[in-house]
Image: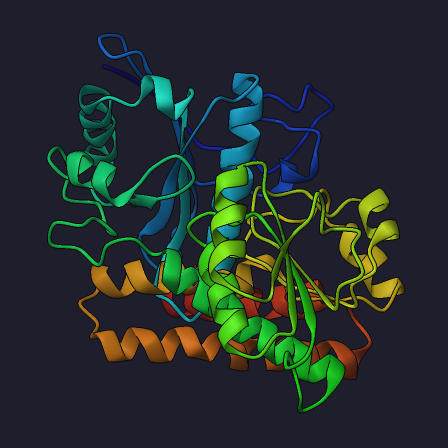
Length: 370
């Protein structure tokens, strides 16, 4: 078992963007506190754990298992995801920092009990600075195994709060309802058409919540045909389509992988509202300006999808089920505040949300004398 630890620099001379130090992309100023590269020769484990900011508390974030095209791609993903976790926890009012981990490889091929135990030992070596949970490619069952080699795990089945998919979906639903009421009036989502891209453990639950809320038509797309077919068979208002991002819908809900909002996709968008569960929905930050210019109301992803971290953060701090539910429902109120501020100041919703995050971090740094 070998570990390399490197604090990330804040300056960025012109060098290839695949490096940890001195990046040339928009992560150059992200100022991650610590990045840990993990390799276990016996199991073949290759993982990266990124701690972005622990001002508010220990860095909490899921472990993504994915067959990345390159180590550079894995690094960029974990840096972006961990930065998003800082914002997500801060916006949701959680006393948690931002962290994330990626394990490189196809989960259907590499995921073994021995590999998960080895990964848990790396998490444990950080002494609680990083607390892991589930993400794409990992499950609550996997976390039960990881927990055998570290106590710094939340969202497991045994002695934990379990899968956070419903909590994430419910938070997105609350945010989407607030956005729909802002754009369409008191009727909100009732009678509207929503396009959900990706119907995995979060997207499928969001579809059920939308159907129960009186959404007239729900268009769904997912490469996994069995998932969309099951929803269409069980819910009368669901239609399976090849693509929803350019469909004639009132709300586009990206719930699969990130970076679907690009200059070209925003130009093709027909939805006046965008709100979904995917992390890092913007290819680059300036895509928020493009949506603002087109009058598209976008709920920043780290605001809408915070329900999962609220659940597992509540587990970490021993909060009751009622306290956790109330905090997830409050995502709707946070969304209302952000949309109102953006309108009042004539700024993007992204800028309004970022201001909330920065204010909370600044207040805590002042308390800590930093």
